Image 1 (cartoon, helix red, strand yellow):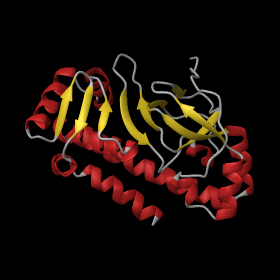
Image 2 (cartoon, one colour):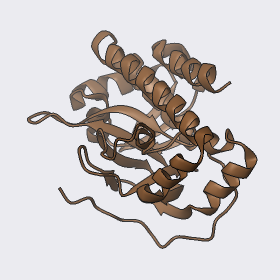
Image 3 (tube, helix red, strand yellow):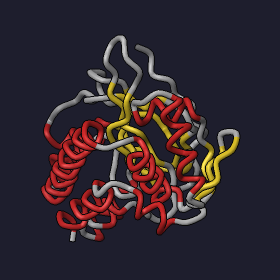
Length: 242
């Protein structure tokens, strides 16, 4: 399958604001940033497909990426979000060259991009980088397990609230451009279920939803509705990287 590339022309580098990179020793971090190029990621761009070799890895700065699993005959299902807390392509630290799932740009913005070939060279030269990426792979595995349980056990309303919180954490914007169809795909539910869940949140004064626009009015209210998976995922990350 052809992977689309809607990337705009790289811009001059700016200081790293990716938490995964910031957690590295300063000299190593600065070296890796110098080895990257700053790119603008465009909403909806496919960055990789399952079982296809990674061409590039991405360290999001202001963009964020959905990890999506695809089963033949069924709609795509989002199983993870990657923002400036992580990266796309961390499994290269396990010496696995292919992507485990599809990755789509869900939020337009900036990211640091490095060729997969270059990252493999860096991994061979820097044990601290291997350790950092392996720790992130562990966090992703924990989050995948919780996402699977969340999809199975929790109703659409608390799952929608969790998803909105995770997106809000990465965009830092109260207004989100989201269609019912897109939300249904991300949550793995019917559009009618999204309509009902969003309507309940709007009735409670937590969000305002109209014509593909969601405005978060009450973040604390959203946190009170979200399933416990949201806070558990934050704790997982903080526990490993604290």
